[in-house]
Image (tube, rainbow, N blue to C red; front, side, top):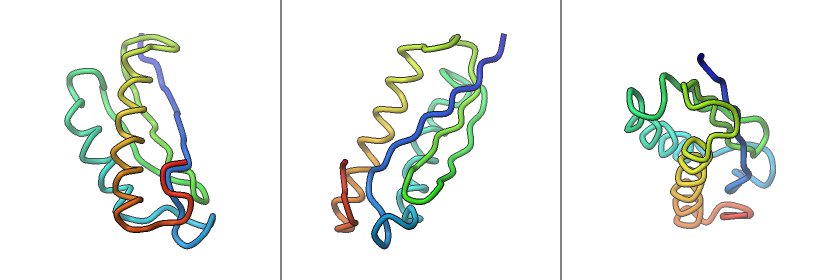
Length: 92
């Protein structure tokens, strides 16, 4: 059975709390692409305001520690980039 997981985090806004910087979206896309065909069936990276959103389909079931661990890793990488870019609230 396919599961859809939507996990979001504020890793840094540009400017302020209004938007996610395109570089953070790029980092998330690159990291999730590495797991397509492994952990993930497919994915989409989006944002709402300054929240980076990972929409992922997989066959790991609800509350999968593997999927949540992947999301955490992606958010950590995006937070590192946010700090490099000196974005508002980087790494919250």
